Length: 242
Image (cartoon, rainbow, N blue to C red):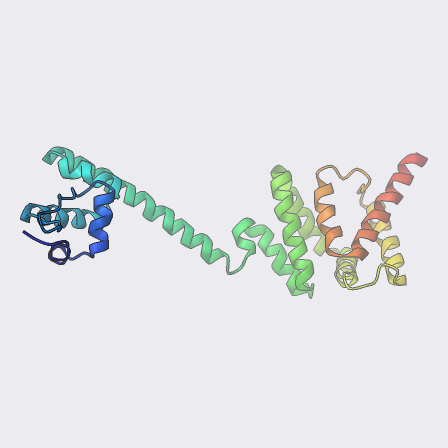
């Protein structure tokens, strides 16, 4: 007969593990003998070794009792099922690793390659990282709010960088993040942006889903809050005059 310490040593586990197996019902706990000790049989050692072997192989504790009692064909079926589950977990973990690797670049995690290319193009133009992050966030919102319009938006954005005047305004918008709202340059930028909207048929007075995107831009800078508000106000005045 074995003490609990001897049983644990025989099976290569800790006494704490033996007690845990008692608690979850995997290994019966013997009654105490006349000296007040629990004594374990050789069969208990065999059972504990089988339990440890299954646990080490990744079998969930909740299924070990079922497998210990299974007939050979049932045991083989259970092993096949567990193997298939492990395969699914391996594939899932591989996908998690891929997504974690994408976190190194941040943008690639949530955006298509075409948008990432736009962000890289902005950096090449000299746009600051704060503006790049804002652009990234607006694309993330755009993708969530109106995914069907993404392709058109990507084409329009790339075309805008091919236009010198649009690029000039974009670079000024980047610089204006650090301007005070009452900086005289803001007034000139508002005039230029408003003229650009008129020339390109844009309408900031009816943002629709774009309201969330405008809110994200306004949150980033008091100056941009003023710029967006003034441009929308001018667009509403034009509609009222029509």
